[in-house]
Length: 95
Image 1: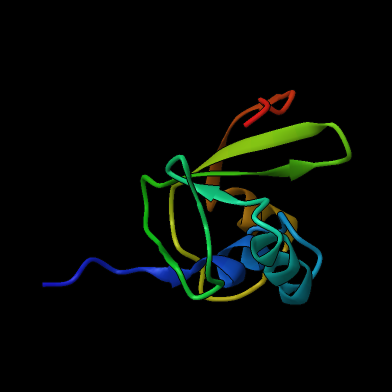
Image 2 (image 1 turned 90 degrees about the vertical axis):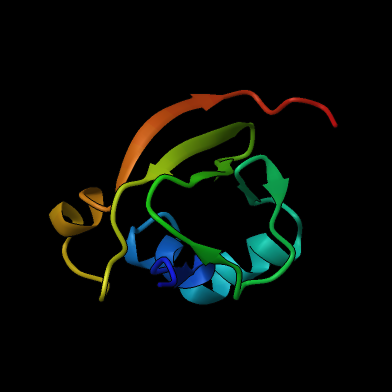
């Protein structure tokens, strides 16, 4: 049986990490989003509970979250907050 997953651009939008799917897709296209330590190359990449996502948080910080549940819609902020666990904010590491 296949593990359930959700497109990463949709997850970032459902979880209110990005204001729109288009913004999520732009961040992914620019190589700014990491999934389990690897750069996400396609917006259609699937995420599942337990995955770790890193993304920009403003100009100088990176936000790290752990996927807890997959959403089915972009609901209120309280619903969105239940989809992930905040791991932390950090200055980006030079690659």
